[in-house]
Image (cartoon, rainbow, N blue to C red; front, side, top):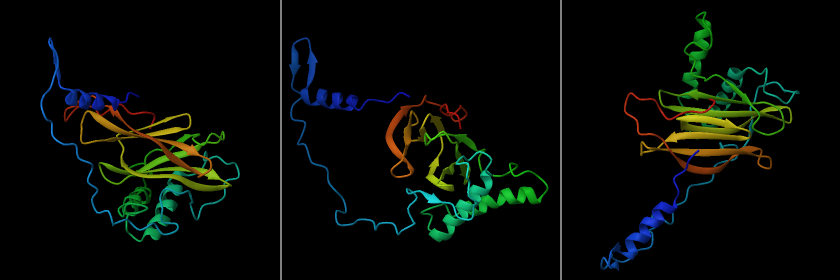
Length: 237
């Protein structure tokens, strides 16, 4: 993926402070004003730390699911995993939205309604098709899926088997412009206020933390597009 270098901004700043060049050499543009240090707002205010078990950035065994001796997510019902995880998270955060969007349970109910009406869970079910991929490097497949909350926002989830238990190792609420997997990397592409750029969050497995950790946050070029044109190219998901 191509990233815009930060050096471009630095070069532009140096050019501005040095003046303009012409055939007679460098000439001063005059006093450009004083340089000011950044102004820090609300210095004395800090958020409270999350209560134990109320942090989406830590691994969490999904309650109510059977053990998986094989260590692989292959053969596990993805919808059952998502339902158990979302239900437990909603119960823990009490509708605050810290662990899961409050709409998630209502959206999940659409999957059950489709089955109860004689159809398949995929018909009208907002849970995306599961993708199996080894992200932890142990040779066992992990599960990647997402619950679409509306036409834009989604709850991205990654599950792995740790010590025989199905464990959520990544939780991310995002506008999924694209999700890409390669080896032990998972990249999440999100739109920015600049239609020519997307933000790319690159997650890699951290065996010490037992989670997918953010390794790099960067910007990637996205061709300018009109209202009816295709979005930026996506990866495997």
